[in-house]
Image (cartoon, rainbow, N blue to C red; front, side, top):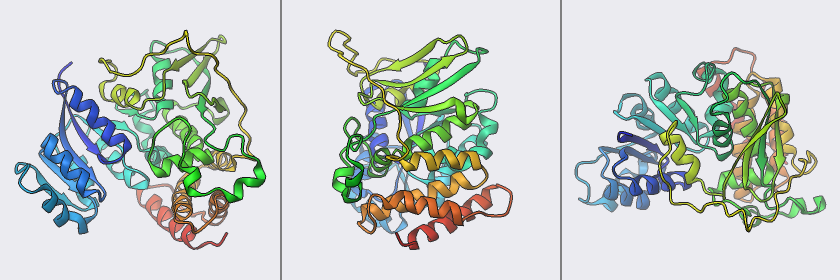
Length: 386
């Protein structure tokens, strides 16, 4: 396998730092084409000094001088740019083999579009690209996954289960969920959940926004929407199931009743590396399954009463049009407001529900109309009272 030149967006986040661990451990297989971060100048400066990419971007333009000060003269060959537009331009014009898009939120959509339009492979950790723009991106997945490779552990598991099954009809995709930290919490205690409690995921170490999405199970809703666009199955053939151990990452059932599953201890480096090297595999130092000590694999049905965000996501993809984009934008703002203690935990689905009822653009889905709907929804979700 020849060396892969990786452009990494969101290098200071959880996915980004783990990606750089993989690159550091495989210097003969990977090089860094460029790094971007939103505002974490301290860590970005350290990453630039360690990997010395040709270019780096700090999306928050006000942070450029701070980044330059922290970097000093440790990487004089690295060109330092600032601003979100430069992130997008990098994906279109820079030289690289694979874009690993680990941005959070709608900000990840345009980089995905530009990379695909320029003929590059995209390792996608940005759920919102497909949630918001799946209708526009489906032309890249209609004939099978080749240039848009999922990084989510669940979608990576599905992809791995489908290897060798070309032409064999799929009956159902089963996307597993841990159930989050409140799987057994009495419903009458949901209103008192604090951000600190919601940020304590039982199995995975992730960023704040996705951890809250895991608690509400909005992340499963977003993943079902992603799967809908990636694998082109009717929504009634894509199902979420709670699996508290997080050992099985997803399953695929075929028309003969056979079900394939991908198993492994929770470790995001596995799907990250697989997305970078797909369809090949390379060694990875990660714990192997010890079936002699594995005592149980249990499953539970999802309760929409406990997890209304999941039902809202399923309704959004059934509605189609702008509904998934509205769902995503409203959820981003609602989670932000919860983390900032502006609303209670149970206010998150209330804001999303109201946005879906109120924001219904009467126009065709396009890049510009999606941007407009996203902006309008964010304003609404930021102001609505709960």
